[in-house]
Image (cartoon, rainbow, N blue to C red; front, side):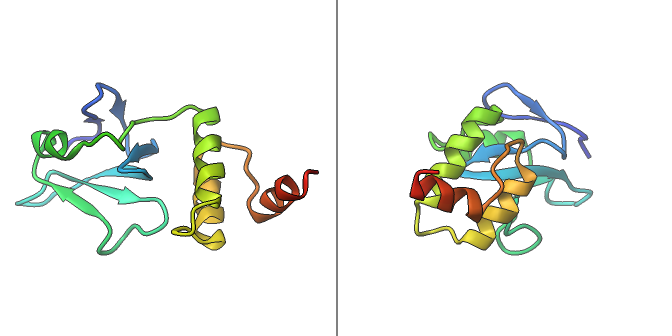
Length: 119
């Protein structure tokens, strides 16, 4: 069971690191499982059907698409959050919870309303 994971872009992450996988923030979780070595867990929807198990790193490499970018900087996560707040696929409750997990200063709905009103 690995304690770190090398992403297809070459970055090495731990279970504490957040990275962008298929346009959404995820963490990696090692598994002690006969069939799977690790899984990727979305920050908000984790712990259920949205977790993505992988038998090995090569399987992740095969599924790593152009919408996966790995670990983002604080500024890049803030841009992602602003964009996500304008995306109807995401709700305020979900994005507020995600924002608390990201390395950003985005305080949630109140900041979004202030930005919209020009404050």
